[in-house]
Length: 401
Image (cartoon, rainbow, N blue to C red):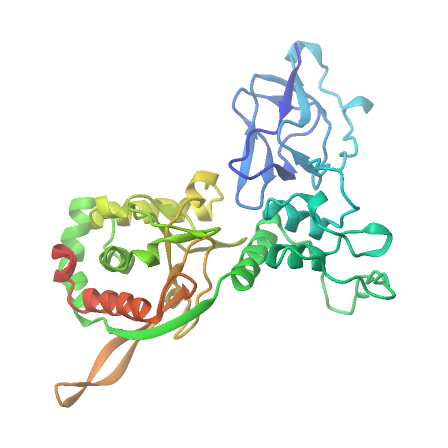
């Protein structure tokens, strides 16, 4: 009996994926729960497993093709029903192009226009079109969002000529962007286009935290089985500050502000495919060891490509540590729809004034980027000062003051 291999549910808001690679060829024997292929979405890479033991009878969709949830990728037959040789029927068939969701009857749409309409949940028929042959343009949609009035039609609309790919040059290599890299680019641009991003800076004396870690790191690791890192101190410090300034933990949804009375902190992790931000849930309920264990687990899964959609969604605030790469100062970009992100940087020995005398201290620049639509400058500065105070006096973290 043959069993179809189908594209599984990919998570909330994810409807399609790219077949990254097949791990088996048509005619190969497979075991139950053995990995057959990898699917790459705009968030994660996931494996599809065999539902039964047998022979991979056919591969319908080749690597590189785009598929939708529920699409049939191939089939597995009983081992006795196949000789193991690859027959012509097993050859990959060209993938059918994914069809865009059907919408109400309206003027013809370009992909970018359709995406803008769907993201803003607009009725296409209600938007007057000013383009050539009744086409709806991006300017029409943007104008409709802002004022509800269509943009004036140009006197002589001119269709833009398609831009051909740049000719290859010596010592160059053209590589197609992965879905993850494209998604990163889209989200970063979305943040810049949507939010009113400002950044405030401060610096923290790391002497107290570094001294505490030096004194207790061996005992901490012996008891909890995990190293005492810097990130748990900053997560705890941010929770203290978020409780005092709840707007930094909130998000804008249309004309409403959603205040979140929980603290799911995203921790940016660099991987070979790009930056991902797995989320540590309910950080306020975790102790230092719990936070360190969860960060270590998520970091390893990120590097192994084993993160799930749930691991990457629902964060309320993000911390990014560019200091591990040597960054001394940067302006982090918001992770939509969040309203705040803390940037940590390299620890440098610098001369500072301490009670009228100059001392050499391990100093770290801190940066808070925030959405000025929801967070005032006073709140942003206060938040960053609270983080600084907790890092310079870690005993505050125990008392949440």
